[in-house]
Amino acid sequence: MKFTILFSLAASLLLLSCQGKNTSGSADSNPETQASPAVRIPPFSADSAYRYIAEQVAFGPRVPGTEAHSRCAGYLAAELRRHGAQVTRQQAEVTRYDGTPLAITNLVGSFQPENPSRILLMAHWDSRPWADADPDPENHRKPIPGANDGASGVGVLLEIARLIAQDAPRLGVDILFFDAEDAGTPQWDKTPGENDESTWCLGSQYWAAHPHREDYTARFGILLDMVGGRGATFYQEGYSLDYAAPVVAKIWSQAAALGHSQYFPDQPGGYVTDDHLPINRSGRLPVADIVPYDRENGGFCTVWHTMADDLSFIDPATLRAVGETVAAVVWQEE
Ligand code: AHN
Ligand code: ZN
Image (cartoon, rainbow, N blue to C red; front, side, top):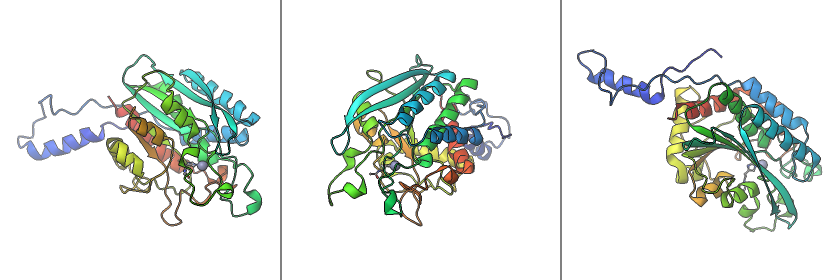
């Protein structure tokens, strides 16, 4: 990747608007309206993000309580540490929809932990125990590979961690991997009409009530969920618009400036019960969710909660659109 972004979107707009007004043609000398100095955004490698996804998938399904799950936690902590983060493992016991106690681990990698100005980047690292949306009923109780649903967001954020190690942004960054997002009530165990919202996002519900640092806050947060699917479209999710409209505007305008509007249409999508919701409701910080919506087929994506959510569904072009956009937001923040 050869490009270097020389001006922020805001700076470019400023320059454009100044051209119209400045009849003398002289350079703008008013410090109030001068473009901010160029910021270098390190080049996001989609191939590297893809490798991080493949490494997670290779452990097998990351279902809480399994050996693959605990081995993957060790891998994620080691990768964050390798990139220079201070790692906090938050362990807790939560209760699954059916009353089963679950030992969970949320992982936090903190960069510049002493910096009071922070950005929080999130994804869930667990994978769903049941392919309950699979076309073949034989698969409804088998765990999904979770390449897109789970591993993709983590892969993009591990790549961001690698970039931070090379070229630190101005703000401190926390990369937070939530456990037990995807153990919500399976379709085959659902009492019709039952409200099962609270059975999802168990790791983020825990963190929202017990942050890894008391009084933790950040300027804003971005959640990545299912961000690697071929042909994905990330419409503006409803709760994100309700709780974090300026964050949505920041992300979608950076995507447009980078030429990624095909992936990030400037249009609202539906409401998604996701890991950002407990945090937004807590009032601690505003969080926007980058989550796909498939307008043609309805739902998130065709492979959602099926055995087909494997590496073959992951497209580096989607990873690149998301990774470059998130990197632009993080490195331009001052
Ligand atoms: C519900 O289906 C209620 N929420 C979807 C959140 C999710 C599941 N994200 C990934 N897997
Ligand atoms: Zn899921």
